[in-house]
Figure 1 (cartoon, rainbow, N blue to C red):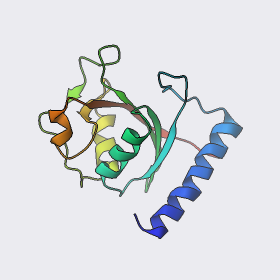
Figure 2: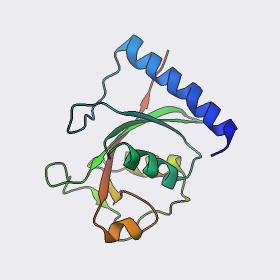
Figure 3: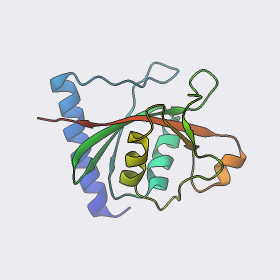
Length: 144
């Protein structure tokens, strides 16, 4: 990640956290220890970079993504027995490329209300280990 992208992500993180605090934006995903994790990404970033960030925080995240159409939010959680959406689009056998963009993946998630299941890490090697994530509820968020 370049310093320029890191700076843009840092500024976006501050904007997201400020809006969450000021406008009581609900955060749907809470981990097993009661923590609410907020991650940020850019539409044009590689999906593998976001998948790594989610894995680094334990697999539970409220993700906000900035792109040319504004800000979108997606919920990400482990695809365990208690959370797994049986109707989710299962992409674990043929996962998206790690170089696919976050924005392209969110477009796909938005078309699948039950969510999309992918390996926790991309490319495909993580699927061999059985670690999977469900991404769902990709939607626009209005900030002030």
